Each structure stands twice: as structure tokens, then as C-alpha cells.
Image (cartoon, protein in one colour):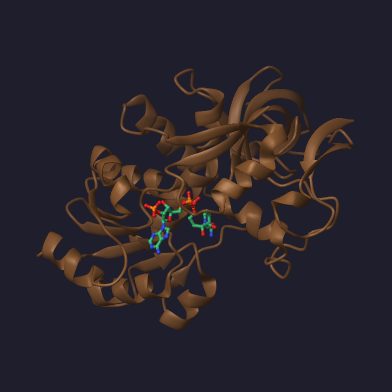
Length: 307
Ligand SMILES: NC(=O)c1ccc[n+]([C@@H]2O[C@H](COP(=O)([O-])OP(=O)(O)OC[C@H]3O[C@@H](n4cnc5c(N)ncnc54)[C@H](OP(=O)(O)O)[C@@H]3O)[C@@H](O)[C@H]2O)c1
């Protein structure tokens, strides 16, 4: 058996509790990792609340968590490139809020020594999502990208990926996060009413593309107006609003972009061009508090659980 945080009914963070679950055995192409840290993502709360039952059918008990860092402790058939004892980070197929979790080997990468466990657990979803969303935007050096929700877990990585590609980034955030965005190489701007005028003042030559992490319908409408069309606007945060605005939504699912995303992240880390912001690390047993803080929607960087 292994210890995990689980829920057996939908509800508030109060439904999360510690549970002994069967030790997962790695299938073909999978490894089992002893989890050292797990990322907390907004989707974890959305699934726990029951709001995503249509998209993610959730049998009980359910262990949340889709990303982790840790040490490989068992390897399934057909796995090459990873061995017992390797320090890794990546996306998991069993809940990462646990002492042990399974991960597909093709969604793992070696953890660089420069990253501690918490920072490594903050990396997989943010980098894979960024890579997957920026790919169709086909940004070229010198272009201008607007990022809505630029100071959050995904946004901080999106800013840095785009800046490293030679793109000028304008990022929306509340005032308290403007200095942080400047330090990452973005031009900060306050979100909300009047955004179009504020962005035009900062980008007199126009905005070429927009990446939305806010899920706000107005942010999508503003993006279409600023870029002059729907072609180079994408959101990962609101599929319904995306459809209504006629812009692209990417949800991940069976995405195969983990490997190139992690390679880009590792190269940027080695070059000193990617800094991972861990907002706060909670012990695994305090997962409910971690989700409560995630649900405020104002974390500066990533919330993680340490095991
Ligand atoms: N589809 C996918 O594959 C995928 C993958 C990952 C994440 N997501 C989604 O993407 C969203 C962001 O994820 P995350 O992990 O980055 O969340 P997060 O860490 O909680 O960050 C949310 C950010 O949104 C900003 N924000 C809050 N209200 C806003 C508003 N009205 N307008 C603009 N920005 C606002 C906050 O900025 P301030 O604190 O400065 O106010 C905060 O930095 C979530 O909805 C998540 O579910 C989707």
C-alpha cells in the first residue's frame, strides 16, 4: 500500500483526506516514481468540485495531481532511458498527490541538479501547456505577444518561453505582480476595463498574437480586437468562451508535446533563461489548504506539495 490524498465525493477542499491505496505497478512504457513533490493545478480543484465530470469521468476514490518530481523506483516493460534511482520530473497517469505515482516514460525528463524537488514539480504542466499553446501561434522574433494571466503558474513560463524566442511580451496581471513580470522580461499591464487602450499605448505597432490563461470572455474579445482577427488567439482556460469568440482552445488530453516542451525548458534552464516561481510548498497532508490557496486564482507562480 501507499499513502495518498484522495476524495470519495465531490465538494469543497474539505473532501480531501489521507487514504491508503494499492501500490501502483508500472505497465508497458511506464515507470513508478517515489514522489518528492507534486504540482497543484487549477484543474485539480475543478475535478474535485465535480465541475468537470463530463470531460474527466472520475471514479472514487480519486487521487488528484497530474505532475510530479521524484525518484524512479520501478520500470515497466519497454522503457528505455530511465532506470531505478534516476531523479526525474514529468506528468503522471495516477494521482500525484501521493507517495508513489505512475508516469509514462515519454512524459518524463531527467531532473537537473539546478532544480530542487519543488521547482521540478512546478515545471511539467506549465511547460507542456506553454509549448502546446505557442506552437500554433507560430511566433517569430520581433513579434508582440499578449499573455493574459501572465503571473500565474503557466503564465510565468509562457512569458519566459516567448521572451527567449525573441518575442516582445505584454503580460496582464494585477499591480502587485508587475515588478515580477518586468523581471521576467515582459511589459506588465493591468487587466480589466480599458485593456485594449492600455495595450495599444504599450504596443503602438500592434499585437501579433495572444495567449489567454484567464478564461475571461472579455480577454478573448480584446485579443481578437488587438490582433485584428481570431487566427492567432488561443486560450487554455475556457473552452466555451473560445467557441463563442471563434478562437482556438487547446485542452491537452492526449497531447504528445511533453518531450519537446521539456527539452526546451531544460535548454532554457541551462542557459539561465528560465526561472521557476514556486509560490508556496505545502506538506502533502495539507493538500486541502494548498487547493484553497490555488482557488483564489492569484498565486504568483506554482503551488506545490512536498512528500
Ligand atoms: N487546457 C490546458 O491544457 C490547461 C493547462 C494548464 C492550465 N490550464 C488553465 O489555465 C488557467 C491558468 O492556470 P495557472 O496554473 O497558470 O493558474 P494560476 O497559477 O492560478 O494563475 C492564474 C492567474 O490568472 C490571473 N488572473 C486572475 N484573474 C484574472 C483576470 N480577471 N484577468 C486576467 N488575469 C487574471 C492571476 O493574476 P493576478 O494574481 O496578477 O491577479 C494569476 O496570475 C487555469 O484556468 C487552468 O485550469 C489549462
